[in-house]
Image (cartoon, rainbow, N blue to C red):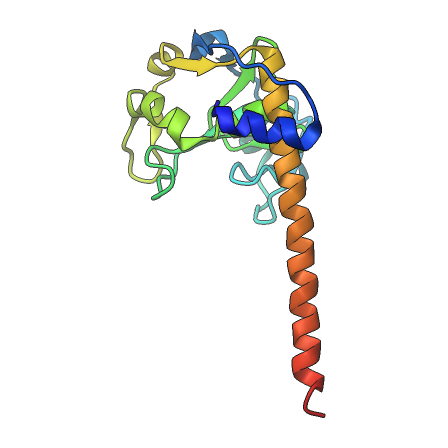
Length: 204
């Protein structure tokens, strides 16, 4: 974690900050692949989540009960691997479910946390390309439409992760930053509306 970010947070919140060395952990010590399927049809088509946004999917067709049973169940704080590649994500990406319990297509591997982690921290940590590019480089392979994930290889990949207390503090930093962005965006939107009003009326 960047020292200057800690100092900025300390000045902003008047809190004392302390940072320690991050621990080297295997992926399998943090997450385990979930094998929970929708076999009892607890979840319906309205519970299908888009892995890209973890919002209820607007584009789903009526499926048979047998096909609905193939869906993977994804609970709050679970993560899913989305294998589409892009300029931003060279080997695919992980997305954390912070919305609601639901289901995702069987093509998306779902993992459950098996140790205490801060959801506000993990949401960004697991999604960060700088952190996940190397582990995914060694644990994914190219497929025709989606990168496929080799779970055995992924389990042995090493991640540097802070203590739970530091995770929570970083989560607070992110929350404060998001609040400031949202507040300033609201001001920008208001100024745009004011400008539009002035442009429409100044020559009347």
